Amino acid sequence: MAEALINLGQLARNIEATQARLGGRCRLLFPIKADAYGHGAIQLARRAQELGVNYFGVANLAEALELRGAGIAKPILIFSASRPSHIPQLVEADVDVTLSSLTFAKSLDQEARGKRRRVGIQIKVDTGMGRNGIWWEEAFQLAKAVAQLSHLELRGIFSHFSASYSTEPQDRAFTLGQIESFTRLLRELQRHDLLPPLRHLANSSGLVQYEKQVTQDPFNMVRPGILLYGAPEVQADWTAPVKPILSLRTWVTSVSELPPGRTIGYGRSYQTRSARRIATLPIGYADGVSWWLKNSGKVLIGDQYAPMVGGISMDQLTVDVTDVPNVNVDDEVYLIHERLPALEIAQGLGASFSEIVLTALSKRVARVYAGSPAPCSTPC
Image 1: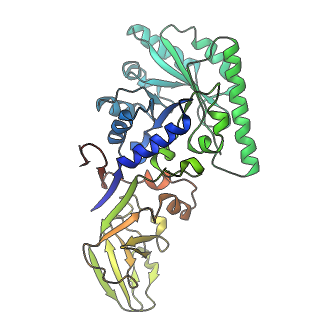
Image 2: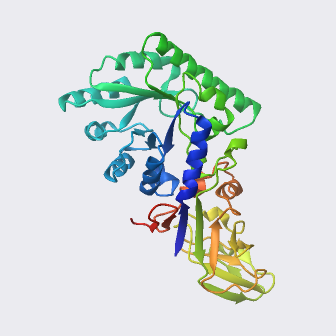
Image 3: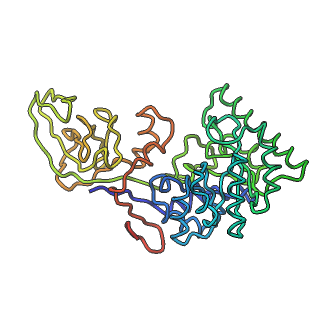
């Protein structure tokens, strides 16, 4: 009843534009977590692997195993902290494990020793995000201790920006402080011959707004997510070829003529003030359309916008097509489009990032891929 149309050709252009900007200075890690931000992890990983992306990033073990099961051979980093109970699987998974605790490191090393394996790890450093990760002031001692664990291979070290998308002076100062703190740590590791092969800090907005700082020594990898999906929060001249790769469409299932004084939807939040023509669409909050778009969102029918009216139901929503001529059952309707970008929708909901819209798309929305050697629809 609804389709997410994913343009793998545009994904290629987005990746190539980013690779060209990096000019070989840094490796490119593609975050493919949350089912590739709602786009379909396996299909996008396969295409990105063909295009020479160096690494993939996922949120957890299950996502990593999904990619490995689909034949993705490139290195994979699990961004988030893992549960201790997952250690036996982590040892077998052939992935980089995020580490921020010596206790966890010792347990992982012991399991690896018992299975006669070596496990790749990357240390997560907290430079101001305040989530998981070891504080940057304590990270040197952790790296030093991990170096003594014979069955762990220290492959990388990374941190994460908290406000790199902001242009507010206080946020810019904080972001520059994060870069400075992390760089100081890396220089200390370098002086003691403990610097891991991979050092990375930049997400999409970090790469765009702080390119010079995050793509030169000691940094050698970047991890732009939403930039590669084509919906970055901030842009630069070089990002002009970067475009969204996803649009969302559905079809009109009924058209009704409502007289003045009729209410629409749960809660009776909308009442017609004059005779209106109302179209019903077979998509709702169970598909990923935010309930908060009631009476404020809009769709695109042909080349005209139509406002959402009434509450968003689980499986349906209603739009006012009075001013859109010749709307009929089975007409195509877009909810995300180049003229209805995900970032604009997110900002209407009070968020400054497109991911809130894209990752909400449920499995009920069919993913349809084009621009690949064999266009297909899920599952394939």
